[in-house]
Length: 257
Image (tube, rainbow, N blue to C red; front, side, top):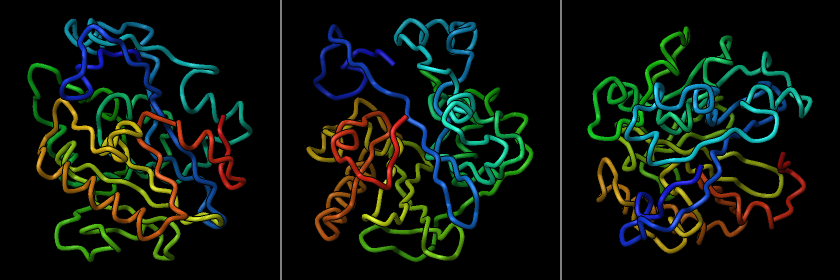
């Protein structure tokens, strides 16, 4: 995704383009099969971008699919069966995270209850929620993070399988129901932030986004994330649109496609 830097960060130039990756992740769980975290962009961004996004949004961003195309096709190319995905966890419901969601028709879609509710309302002038991405989803799992137990520095969490291997964490701020996912891998925890942190500088240097559902909460979540990394140095943080640190980490328990 090529977007003006001014759309991302406060003080950014509207004349300077910034190239971002629309990331999606697949966890190969030893007993629960495949778990997807976010689904990236869908075919609509190339087939008819203006009809999909609206004229204003289509004029702001240049979007394209890489490699084999949508996530399900990339998985097939990598030797992973999209039909074996039992759970799709959404960090939030913006179109660059839900584009290929309906490719996993047999999966249970796990989302924060507050996010699903907010996604049903209009957001002017730029609406990043595209109902067509999820209007045929058959199985929803709505997570209410309110009142749940904290996990380390995070205010609330949900243990997806009850075994401590995959933990969903409350990261609301970017949107009304943003959530992250901590995956306990052999070489240390991996935190998938979704757009609570767009890029490396979002969490490492607390670079403020141009907009957020609740900027105060966004700011608080960044410091909770920074403190977690300080307490658990083996942690790898992967922002929603930036593979920079991950590409150089060279961890044997992570494969980049």
